[in-house]
Length: 47
Image (cartoon, rainbow, N blue to C red):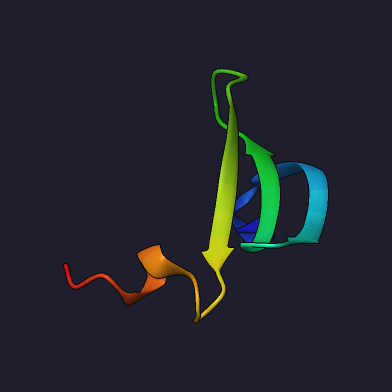
């Protein structure tokens, strides 16, 4: 994402539920990029 010019405003941080980093979109909105831990209930859902 960085190579595509995405600006991260917070470095990845470990939380109880997984890893989260915050990036800014083209319009200045902030988005959380989340990777859930394998044992998190939502990570086990089927799509």
